[in-house]
View 1 (cartoon, rainbow over the protein chains, first blue to last red):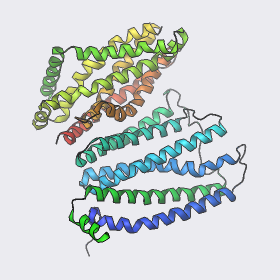
View 2: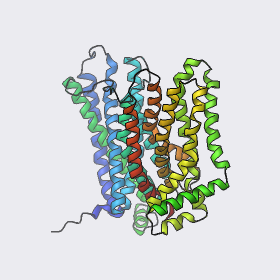
View 3: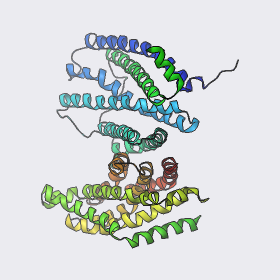
View 4: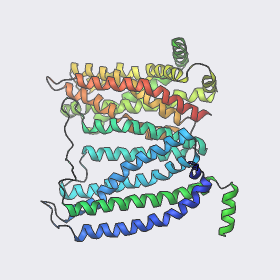
Length: 247
Length: 223
């Protein structure tokens, strides 16, 4: 039996597949979010060392921050796949990921500011991780701006793919340079993070929320890519047939 | 290959010498931005000395970024760029030649004018020397990274402002260490070599990869 590895790399076959997957991911998002938030609010201690109730923002903050970084990596993988295999769908996936990633970055920054205000007494601290996240937001914005500034979709796809790859190459250097502005005495991260020291209930709730965010990203990205497919392929016969039957 | 490089550099320099204002605009942009800060934040000597490295570097970033728009634009407008892409010579060498000529016209003047900034901001002689050296190593990196952005935004409407969005975040590491070394030079007995090693490492990496990426960007934009 031979497997056709590229069967779903055609928009015409991927569109219905994505349509079937979206409800599953949407339901998983709802269930996991409810479970995670319930666990986070009712199964965890109200006071955590010197932090009070407000530490619970990590159930949103950490998943959003993780998703923001992970999604940029996934975006670059799709961009790379697009440049290598020259598949239109890869570029469409990359384009669909960008807004979700940018929103996750924004949520991470926003909730981080709340957390900073309550525990450090300041909205913004130029902490290395905050700065890195801010720069990540700039990278997402640059990607989307370039994509929308070019009218020819083929050029827009390839140009923004190249930009995303250049961005990913620069990301480690940028992160390292904000972490370590003085090369002679490289300071450790402002605050050491470790999941090992966390209370298990908090950890569980947080991980459930991470999966909820993940499922949300899947659902939203697939919905967006379906729209992009329809928009780009509007002259193709299969789209017109599809629209005829849906009328 | 070296002849191609020299040919491109000489051509771009000759073209620029026919229209000298372009070079001077960048330079005066830099001088004006740098002169605006003392008017905005006050003329207290200590404050000025403190902010000088950052101000000089941000101004250099903006100046080199504004000049980038012209890197490929005129060649694109009159069709020279397409001819360049069709030549058998490797495109990355042509790009490298263009970037080098561009740096001679926009980056080097900034290095040479840096002592003026030092005087305006009451920097010590050592700091001025360090700043010139840092700009000498740093500004080529800015031109090299910027060439990728210039290639990607070729011929787009609102290209200049878009270019700043794409390129400025990538300039951050250069600025951090470039400004950092000037700040460190004000402190007695601090080790400056680490900063210069890092800046030089950036330069080498940029020299290797960015002409290649910029050539790919130009191919995407022109095709």
